[in-house]
Every structure is written in C-alpha cells, then in structure tokens.
Image (cartoon, rainbow, N blue to C red):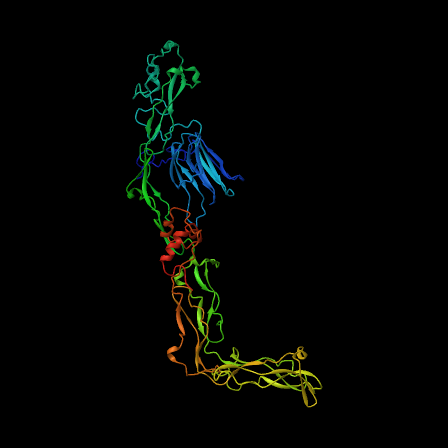
Length: 624
C-alpha cells in the first residue's frame, strides 16, 4: 500500500497545487499570462514582477530567439544574466529559492529559454528580457497564496499538542478558568503565556532594551484584549527542511474575535522565532549537464553530457547514489550530432583541349570545393589531400610541316618589258594538315613568276648586273651585283646619273647565298611550362638534328645532344608572406589544436598560427 502525504499507510491524500496535503486547489491563485509587447530599443526591458511568496514559477520564451531572459531582485542584485554578462545554464539561488536556468543548445531544437523555481520567494523579483530581435512572446506563470491561507501541510506534520492554525487543541473538559489561566500575563517579561503552545512555555524571550522601564500594564481584570497565536506562516520549502514563524493577532480575551492591533499593547507582542518544517527530504532528481561540443565540425559526430542524481536538503543540493533516481527515466548521456554536411570536391568540367595541336602542351579542367547546399566555398573547407588535379601535361605527337606561301606581289619588277613578280615561300609547322611527318619535302614552290608591262620606249629604269660569287664556300654567305640607272632606246641603253632613277625602287645590290652545307646541328624548341609550381615538376622540349637546309639529319654528334626533359621548380611550396598575417587572439593555439583553420573566420583571426601549421603539413595548401 502507498503512503499519503499525511504519512498514513493506505491514504490517498496528495498535495495540491497550493502545497496543502489533501487540499482542493482553492487555497491559492494561479497568475499567468503572455508578454507580447513589440519592443524597439535594444537592451533590458521589464516583463513581469514576481511577488513575495510566489511558488511554482515558470518563465518561458515561446520560441528560440537571440534574446535572453534576466532576473533581478528589488534590491538591485542581479541573479541571472545581469550587467550584460550572459550566464551559463544552471541553477542559481535568489529570492529565497533556487532557479533553474535552461537554454536549449541543440541545433534542431526550437525551444526558447526558461526560468523555473519551486518557491516560495521571500522578496519581490523582476524578470527582464535582453531585447536583440523581435519578441517571440514570453509566457509567465506562478502561484500565490489565497486569502487566509496559513501553514500548508499543517495537518500532515502537526506534532501532538501543537496548536492547529495557531490555537491550542483544548480538551472539551477545559473550563473558562483554565483558559483564563493560560492567558495570564506576566507583567515582568511583557509576554502573554496564552499565545504560545503549552508544550513550550516562555518560548519567545523579551527583546526589551535594558535602559527602558517596562510599561505599566493595566490591571488584569480590566484588560479586554490580548495577543494570541492564530497560526503559522507557510513553510519556505515544500520539502528538504524549510522554516516558518508563528503568527500573532490581537483578539478579544472573552470572545476570541480578532480586532485591530491598536487594541493590544505592542510592547507585549511576542517576537516570532524560526521553526523548522517539512523536514522530509525532497525527491531525488536527475541533474542534466550541458551537451559537449560535437566531436566533428561536419558530418555525423557524437556529443556527451553529464547526468547526476541530486537531492535537495536544507537549501543545499547534494549528489546522491543513482538508485535514488530509479523512479525517474534517466536521460541519455550521448547523442549523435551533425553541425553541417561536409563539403566535397567536384569536377565541374571535362578536360580542355591540349594547349598545342602537336608536341607537348597542357590541358586543364575546373575543380571546385562545394558545400552541402551546392554553393562554391573556399578550397580550405575541403580535404586538400583529396583534391583532384586540375592541370596536366598532354603530348599531341610530332608536328607535321608544309609549305606556306604569300600572295604574288602586285608590282612587276620592270616598268616596261619583261620582269618578274615575287612571293615568299617558307616551310612551317602545319596545325591542320595531315601531311607526312617527315617535313615539307623537296618540291619547293616557285618564288617568282614572269610579267610584262609592255614595250619600253625611252623609259628610265634601274639595270642590275649579274651576281658575284658567294662570299663563303659553304653555309650562308653574301654576293653583290652592280645596279645602274639607264634609258632604254631602240636596241641601246644610255647610262644616266642615278639621280634620274631616284623616283624608282632600286633593286638590291646584295643578297644572301648558300653553296653547300657545312654540317648538321642540333636544334631545339623552347622549354614547356613546368608541370608543377613547387615541390618538383618537369618540363620538356623537342630536340632535332637538322642540316643546313633545315631538314632532318642523322649526322649530329649524339654526345652534344641537348636534354629533352629536365626537373623544375624543386623548391618547397611556401605561401606568400603577408605582413598583415597576424594572430588577433592570444589563444590561437587552441584553434590549431581543434583543427579549425579550415574555416575562413579562424584562418583570418589566427592567420600566423594557421599558416605555420600549414607549412609543417605537406599538401596542406594544395599543389598544382
């Protein structure tokens, strides 16, 4: 069988919301409401006043916001979140009771902040809101005693012989004379014995100053009014040892009717002494700590919190054995968490075409770090060790060659008679043709063609003689010829002063010549771009043995052949030194240890520390 709140086996009595054993909830009043005012100014705004004696206090923000609740006593003492300092969630003592401050920190939670307290309060408290964004609404509720409410649970914990509601339980056989005897006044101490329980006579000593003469009391038979204990104050706690005081009122000594205190002698009013009450321990409860930080900054991780079995006694909260909390479901100590989905590398484009149509070149593709929302973010938010290459060398094979020709010149070499028109002919790499790879071949196109501007009749012109021998026996040399100004007549030429032909373009009197090859030589292209910008790459070039006529040859000395491939950029990858890269906080080593340098904010705030650790970790900055 269960035990009721009156400590009787098999009793079904319970404590009502007013704290009275077997009560019917009519001895108190519930005060509740919602603060929905629209606020404009930032800072502290008063929400509600909690009166003295309030119990079951519940102040709750209706949804999560960036605002904070604050609590302060009328004396100006800050209890929670005062002076612009935000306290951690926990238990705080104030106003004679213990307040539990909750601030849910789960990302998925939409619950707001709250203050909870069992009460009763022993002074007036003010609840404030630190306004920073639109008010989501604040629900408040508390219970205050109703009229003539005295000593909750008095029946359940009354000791034998103790007065009920301040009056002695007199046997019915007690006569008026006995009652008068209990009210007999001691004029020396200024106390009325009839106002105290008979089991503790003289309980309230006099506090009369020694230098004050006791007031002369009227004769006992003429005094009609007397002080009488009519009950006790409510216990300060519902469990775990509280305190209460007797209540004395002025009454008519014959009818026991309460009258104004002015009818009684104030100097004889007993001074109430504190009494212990509700000595039974409070039920044990689970004290839930704050969740730890998630073990991972992205992806699925774990978080932990401490769960302790606690019990309150004598206004102190003690840690007890866990079996005392077995009547309650134990909250979870671990939970999964996910701050955000990790960013990942994405290849956004295919490889581009090779940068050259033939030979060795490079090709690229677009590689980006993409968040779980599909946004492109800084590369540091992805694992640099897993970054796909975005540039590589490509070999398009040997280059083909063909003859490239210009258009014929518009002007004939002779203004009259027979002459020639010219064009340029050169053998070059062909980027679009599929000619054989051995080169342009020996079928060189003609560089001149005949032309005739009509018969000459006394016209002035330049006349060029034959070329001299080449100045060298092999390889490239020069040769000269004589160029004179003449007038052509029928069958004859008259030599004129060169001034006469000055308005005409004079043919060249010198040209290059080539008799025979002097020997084959090694030719090479420029080096390609290095495959890496640091920590060792390679570059290549094409090397060919060519004869004097720029055709492939096998007569070159192999010992003198230039290198076709060589290492490059062997230096370590060192980030650019920025004089503005400094640590803004003294504890940046914590940021490095927590591996927070991948985030832009910490990388900037702790630039020097993050850069140093990056240089010690190969591949941290990425390579190309």
